[in-house]
Length: 332
Image (cartoon, rainbow, N blue to C red):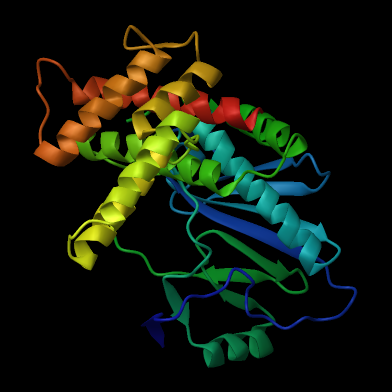
């Protein structure tokens, strides 16, 4: 019996611990936006991870890595569940960084399955054939290595700068070796940048990219004199005869003025991290302000002046800008 799941499946696969001698594997299933971004004629590629364990990249939808868009990365032999999970999480973040650094759209999923096989059927197969069937988790899954394991799934029915498997494995290991924690804001920006490669609409892609860039900023407080002025306006509003609901709305808006504006924060971030970089013939600080102005027009008016803003060109350059910004912040 096959059914669509209405419950999120956790990234810890629901399987029984076998015994203390069992070793564990991690598997990361991911999709890429453009076929050929990983370039090899074989269906799979074996290499060693920087942690010393063997890994295998597998094309899940075609007989060639070069023509595939759906992949899994597997690594086995870990002494316990927690070690496999930790190494899997490092590898997953490293895949995300690799994708950003190499302008490859990647969808690493949310560590859940979109479809599932009935648990009774799974148990019968395990008892009768000695083979484990697991739901095809999109993302990271950890499982014991005691018996052959297969993954159940249901499916419906432009190449730029392809990378061979030696480059892929070397770069992934370079990132794993230098791995350090990525905070939530940077990780969100990386995910949005990767998702943007799946977007075929230039306007939608541009808005995704500018939102990703905004997610990186941490606005600073204004100067003491400016803060005093805003607080005075807040006090005047509190003591006004306006209805309470109107007072609350205005006060909440005024509180946003205690911090620097988004445009100023974006400009400052560019000045700190990419002062000498040029995008679309503009230095980074001027470029990002132009993007933000275009974003405001697009969101609030529904259009931009085409003779002033080429959204296709801005989106292409903003993708490069965000990649440079993220890699600079992460420092890999």
